[in-house]
Length: 78
Image (tube, rainbow, N blue to C red; front, side, top):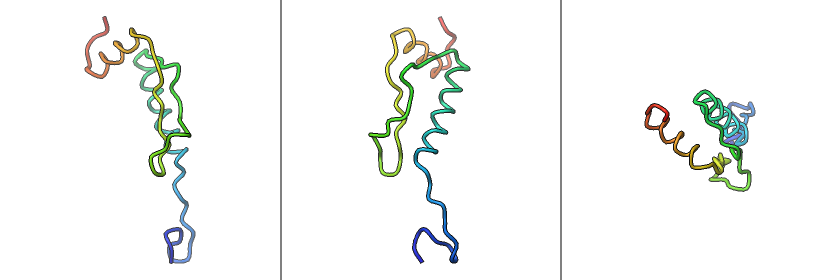
């Protein structure tokens, strides 16, 4: 029996895009709730670590970077 079968039944292989897409959607929702937009936020299908597709945070302007830092530190926005 190989890793794709259990007691004769096929086992679904994890979909790396689905996992990464779910993480991306969760991050985007949290950023939206905090009033932060990262315009380049997306998946980087060319950059993988093993079976994982990386989430690309992209680029942002200095004001957005500071707002993101404040949210991570849980400080009030200035």
